[in-house]
Length: 203
Picture 1: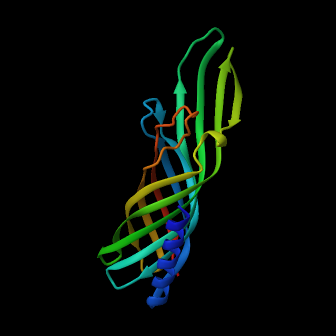
Picture 2: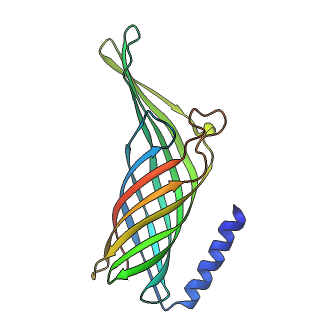
Picture 3: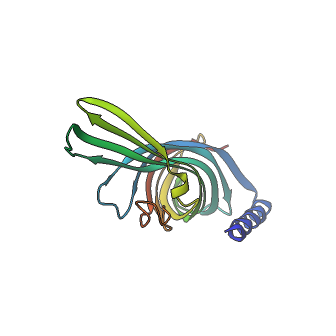
């Protein structure tokens, strides 16, 4: 993993030196995430925020590395009736530092498609639950970081539209490749799946 990241940094450094146009800026948006291979998983709404750099080779092709803080996971709603317990809702909230490195191709002026790998590093993992007993709701939260793999690898694909004033809009789906959980995790065979919609500015 370290060799892959080091190689990516070297290649990006070479690219920066070779290009005449490099743009930087912030980006942020909404995550619509879930965990695959878990039939009871529902979509969890989260967020992402970070910075982006675009290294242009020519009018058609560029490389776009990003550094993103991403809140994702899944939501579960169990409609159960066990004595005084009338229902259980909980969220698996996983927070990562993600590093996508995307190839971008401009189909027309301002409109581009993007595709490339994403390297994720776990920052926080928490199970946040709500249990209803006799009409009262109680929180049941616990740290699950030890049950979740610290590294996540995926592939990102999407499109973007750049406005002439520097702002851009972006939509992307990140397909998880590696398992989220360790052997003692309830969803060890699940992968992250995250749809992202957001805006940014490059200058």
